[in-house]
Image (cartoon, rainbow, N blue to C red; front, side):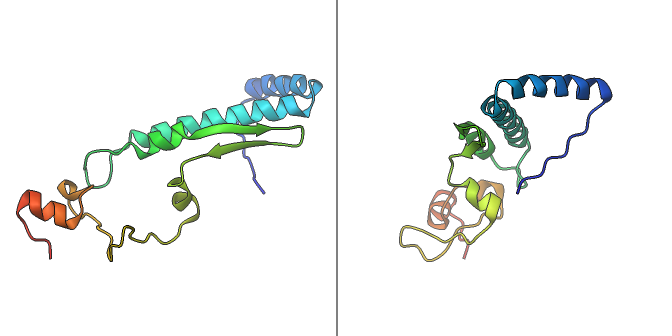
Length: 134
C-alpha cells in the first residue's frame, strides 16, 4: 500500500480540491491520469536533483540518476489506477537491495577506493597506472 502526505496552505489546498473535483467529474480515469502525470513529474524532479549531487569519492559522474529519470514514465492508466514505471534494471537494487555478483566469469568485484580507479577493472588500472593494487 502506498501512502501520501500532503502539506499545503489554505489557498493551495482550495485550488487543488477544485481541480480534483473537476477531474472526478471526468471519471476516475481522468483523475488517475492527472495523479500519474504529477507523480512522474515529481520523480523526474527528484532524480534530476540527485544527479546534481557529487559522488562520495569526487570521481567523474556517471549520470546514473539522469538515466533513471529518463527511464521513468507513465505506462498505464485505467479507471482503477495508473502505473508509473522505472524501466532501468539498475534501479531495482536501489529500491529493494540485494547482492551484486561479478559477471563474465570473474571471481571478484572491483570496488574503487580512490577516484582515479573508478570504472576500471583491477587489471586495467594496473596496466594504465603501473601501480599494483594487490
